Amino acid sequence: MKLFSFNKKELFSDPEKERLVQAIRQAERLTSGEIRLFVESRCEYVDPMDRAREAFLALGMEKTKQRNGVLLYIALRDHQFAILGDQGIHDKVGNDFWQKEALLLKTHFSSHKIIEGIEVCVKEIGESLYHYFPYDSGDQNELPDDIVFGK
Image 1: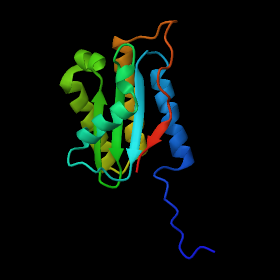
Image 2: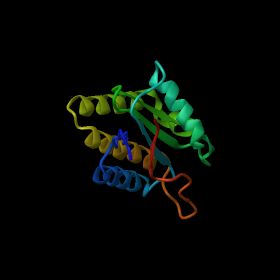
Image 3: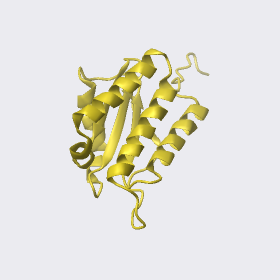
Image 4: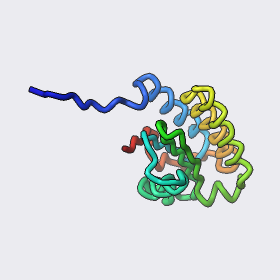
């Protein structure tokens, strides 16, 4: 008999998870680039970019053939996020692109449109990846498309 139920509340519903995974798959469809979504409740770091770097390396995202992986890191309850692109894509798009995407996320998040904001951001990152790293017949999906949930 349980005295207390400590069921961890899911950060996203199953339909929301499916929408986001489909957004990632759609964005990656025409590119060799890779997009990962890492979501957790709280960020243990002062700067969410530090946590994003840690997750990026833990997920092996720096090992893509063309160094064209992008991580969207989101700490929902702390209202923090970071977008981290590997060297290959960062060299192509520069800081202005990442700042534009961060502003897009912030605008959606402040309107409580978390899922829509992530979808739009993933779509735009996919378009940029397609522009610089178009798919060719030898490409393979180097990283899973699923959402990674942290603490």
